[in-house]
Amino acid sequence: MSEYIHPLSESVERTHVRYPNRYGLMLAGDLYTAKGMDRSQPQMAVIVGAPYGGVKEQGPCVYANELAQRGFVVLTFDPCYMGESEGEPRHVSSPELFTENFSAGVDFLGLQPFVDREKIAVLGICGSGGFALSAAQMDTRIKAVVTASMYDMTVAARMGQTPEQILEAKKTLAAQRWKDAENGYMPQYIPTFPETPLEEVPADMPEPDAEWFRFYAVKRGHHVRARGGFTTTSNLPFLNFDLLSHLDEISPRPILFLVGDRAHSRFFSEGAYAKALEPKEMYVVKDAEHIDLYDRTDRIPFDKIEDFLKTNLK
Image (cartoon, rainbow, N blue to C red; front, side, top):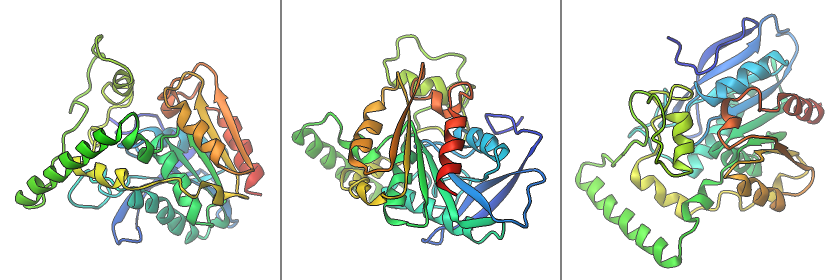
């Protein structure tokens, strides 16, 4: 059985690749191209990042399969410490490293003779939307940005908490660091989703937990290498980091924000849109919740994405 949640088109070729990030960690990726693509000419390229905690075999393969058919070279990847990429201990998350992974993708694509270095864009789903924007803030080689159901994980880390609650969270995480150190730096990791997919989501599960389970915990999006969550102390740098503090500096490169009209996360995109300078665009997808922009090919506005990228990568 395929590990990918979406079938590969007969007109698309997928090649597994490995390449380093700036920290020397080898990233595992998939390179998608249309069969018969003219490799003698430099092509437009897109790097697609997975939702926070996800892997390349989930949402990214859906986008890559479609965009390759529309003429783009597409790179998907597992973040370092995740999936098939390097990094020990496993399931460590970092706002800086997860931002760097996008720039590492630019490095890799720019070394391919069939990719135009001046026509590389990034597309981030959920948490990767925030990391893609963060990468574009500093890496001017990224010429356009698309986010889908964007999350800013540094805002999410503090969201809804009083200063007193944040202080208690820091104390709890500091205590966990002692435990991890005493355990030989084997950090605590508690997965969110089951090892094997559920038949259905428990009826009494509250939202938005139930929404995550509607994708990651059932056959729709379940993957053995994406069981949710990160090492407990991974939360520390997200409490100490402002991922989108220089969002205005992406301009004059364009940003397209895609968001479902029923997405619980819609305010993340609206807040980032307000901070960003022109050119920018917000595109609201009708009858779509947050996870629908992970894999619902009847909801993801591929025509809009294609038009935005081809217009701005000319």
